[in-house]
Structures are given as C-alpha cells and as structure tokens.
Length: 307
Length: 307
Image (cartoon, rainbow over all chains, first blue to last red; front, side, top):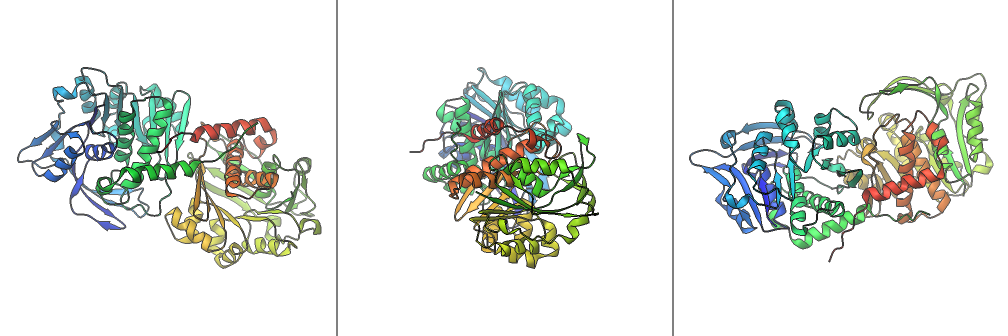
C-alpha cells in the first residue's frame, strides 16, 4: 500500500566524538523513505530542495520505490542545511548552523496521485504545514502519524494542538512529551496527549527504548545496548520509517501488529547509528534486519508461568 | 535456603514533591530483608543499630523470618540517620543530613551459624567491610552479590576493586557503572566490570529498567511506567532483596532463572515506591506480587515469527 512521506530532504554536516563529515545527505523525509523502503516500494515523498541537491541520492530514493514528483526543486536556490556537534554522551548536541534556505518558503502541494495514499507520515515540520497536507487528502488515510519537536511547542503551540486533533499517532521523545503536557510522569503525559487527539502515541526514550500507548494498553520496546553509537543523526526518523513501512507492508493496524512495527523500527534505528548519515541504511540487507529483530526478541525474552 | 544480608538498619527522613516524613525506619539491610521476606523465611541480618531503634521494626523483621542475632546493638548510641530531599523528577536528591552514628564503627562479625549461608548479599557499605564479611564464611556461598556506590569509588577504589574480585554479582546503577570503568557505553562498561571479577552484572536504569549481563548474554528488563512515584527511597535495595529472595527460594542459578529473578525484583521495587519507606512492602500480598509480574509479562510481550 502507498506510504506518503512529508519531510525534509537536506544536507547535514555532523561532528561526533568519533569523527566528522563534510556536507552529507540527510533530512527527515530522506531517512524515513530510506528506512521504510526496506518494507515497501510504494512511497511518495513531498519535500523541497534547491538545485544543489545530490542527483545520486534522488535516484537512490527512486530505486527503492519512492515517487519523487512531490519534491519541489527551487532553481538557483540552496537546500536546507543543518550542522551540529554531538557531546560525548551523544544524547546532547549543539546546533552549529541552521540554514533554512528553500525550507523557509516550503508550502507543500500534493500531486493528485498522492491524495489517496493509505498511510501518511508527517516528519517534523511546521505544524501548520502538517495540517495543510492532511486537508489536501481526498480520502482519509488508514493511519496518519506525525513527528514534532520542542521548537514548535515554543513558537506554535496553538497550531500544533490543532494538528494533533487531526492525526492518529504522535511520535515524540520523552522531553517533548513532558513539555507538551507539563506532566513529568510519562503515564500522565501519555494520557494528556491522547486527550489532545492522537489515539496512538509512541514515546521514544533513545538508548532506553520506546513506549507505545493505546487505550489502556502500553508496550515497552527495549533499545539494543550498543557497544558504540557512531552517529545518532536520523535515528528517530529511521525508527518512524521502519515503523510505518512495516505497517504499510503488513496492512494490519491491530495493537499486536503495531508492537511488531515498533520492534522493526527499533531494529532499523539500531543500524542507522552505526555509520554517518543514512549510509548504513543503504547497505542493509533483509537478512540483517531479521537477525537484529531476533536479537530484540532474545533481549527481552523470559518465561514466568504464574499459577 | 538461607540468605545472609549485610547492610544498614537505620532511620530516614524524606522529603519528596508529594510529602514529607519524620524519622521513619529504613536502611539497605532492612529494605533487602523486607523484600526478600516475600520469597524466603530463612534470612540472617548483619547490621548495627543504637538503642534508639524501633523494637517494632525489629520484631517485624523477625516475624518474616529474619534472624537478627547479627544485629549489634550499641547501648547509649544512636542509629545511622539519613535525611534527603528529592527533586521534582525524583531521579536527583540532595542529602540534607548524614549522621553516621553507630555506623562509623561498624565492624561486622558473623555469628557462627551464619557462616555457611547459601546466598550472600552485601548492601552498600565500605568495600573493606564487605570483603571482611566474605572472608568470615566457612563455605563459599552459591552466590555472593554486592551493591556499591560512587562514594566508595571516590575514596576507596583500591578496596572496592579487591572486593569485586571476591564476588559473583555486582548490582549498580548506570552512573556507577560508568564511573567504575570510565566507559560511557554500558556494553563496554559491562565488559570492563566483568574483567574486574563479577561473572554476573546488573545495571539498574531506574525508570528505564535494568540490564543483566552474563557471558555474552544480556537481558533487558523493563521498568513499569508508573503514574506516580511517591518515594524512591529503598527501591534499589528492594530490587536486590526481591532478586536474591527469588533465587534463594528457587535454588536455580541458571541465566533463565536469573532473568525471572530480575523481573520479581523489579516488581517489588515498583511497589516500594508507592508509599514512604518500607510501608508498602509490609502490606504487600503474594497475589499482588503475581499480579504485578503479570503486568511486566504483558508490558514487553510481542510475537514476531521470523522465517
């Protein structure tokens, strides 16, 4: 089934304690598609780039099943560029450069053929634009998921709350869940967020795993204890891409299957951080994905038989 | 089988965002026994108190199967007293008062009948005293576990390293594992700690769960997402007590059974934090423990069948 992805396609320059890159390709939409592409070859990508962006990367996206008609190319302009430096613990980072460039005037217009996509994932962009994408759909997708960040809570909380009413699933990290609700307890935060609209909620806890909430149910997915995290850039988008790709492939929105999707998303993210940028996603084989999922199965496996 | 517990029996005064206590009973040895007592009634406790300590609490410990001959009572002296205030996030606390009192001259001497205990848990005390307890055993216990803290790494690292060579299992939290090894990655820290002596290692991650390491195996136990944590005091000792109590009850030191013990320890800790001090442990029924374990089972349960 078709998966519509809205997000950035951009350049990053990254410094971690382990090394440094020049400008490499990145962006939420790019990571989501490169991850979801391991599960489905029916993707549509809405984004904006300058004419400086890598043709090779665009061709790669097409080769894995991404329709790129929805990527607007601005002649004579530059693609979005972000540069950051990670601290030793890799949980904190300093932004060195944010050049919005073409992103400053992003106004997503969906090609006609995108308007009946069955799954929609809205990467972290201005919530007003996320809402605008949803209103262009001619048919309600089976699942609308969105990412966001504290930045939008600081400057566009009203718009964010409007958009939240329109989606089925919100994917945020712990700090974002707390800031959005002013609740420290994640259980209370989760309840408050679901009051805001989304029936489903995923709270990402980085190296501590992820929580999936729905109704009165909660699922705790572990994160793989890793010897080294090389570059965390894109891990969250890779998680989201694996999650949505798995759902689009299996066409099953039961809670049981969403749990599986969280595990597949976690497996994808655990690979993403092994190399700079989306490089590891490009090399990844289906066998490696299955092998990593097996590690997740064993990681949390225990048998207690209660009376 | 007999479980020998060495640790403090003390008074605490606790402030959390939810309330404040006067002097209430606490101490690592006390929490460990009150937790382990739900699994075994063959415990021996080595500690030191002043004649100000609560007779009622001592009688309670006896009533759940604790031999208290090993608790030295110092006439005319005061029991160890700690007072602290937790921050809003409950992960950080400020120590307001630490009155060592009798603990300043603690020199554990084991009653003869304790010297062939089959399981030994050394609460967080001076590593030189922990070693001294081990050398008094006439027979090597089936499992020697120890807790420690960053304080001993700061002032007694050499002694700590000597004691680590003598034990089978170390139980520490994330920060302690990192400080002990100068490794940020918990996988690397775990490898380094097992080079120091312990074959088994548990790294507690508080609200994020716990990791059990042995050989090339790792088990990730979740923590229950809680609506409210009322008072985290004693949660770590309660975890250790539940873990050791379950092992003493089941007499099975396989990795599979240790995983079960981690889940039971986690269930006990999740109850401990619901009320001030060890109060919740006193009220706890066996049915409640089983119910909580069931919640843990469901929390991480997913089924993926790989090809």
